[in-house]
Amino acid sequence: MSKFTKHRRKQISELRPYVKGEKLTGVSISDADKKNGSPKIGDMIARNPKNHNDKWLVAKKYYKDNFEELK
Image (tube, rainbow, N blue to C red; front, top):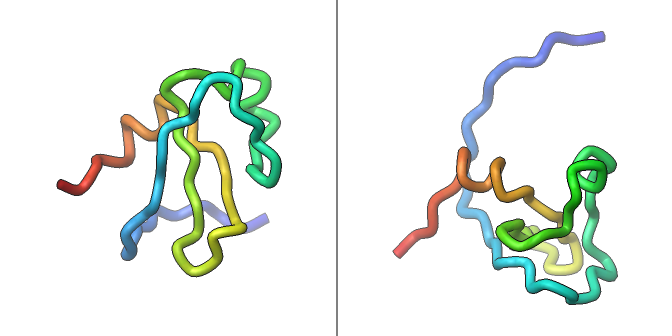
């Protein structure tokens, strides 16, 4: 198995807040996030800017630790 190394993101990410009760058809949610109760308020939905059909959930804590909204 190869070793993990640190990488910096080079692109702008597109995210929007999760809305309680919305259907997340087509949104990938990791098993770890599901085990932690996601989807939940504060989570974000990310999408690939080059393929808007490629979407995934970003947990609230990970979002707060790694992203900030551009103004």
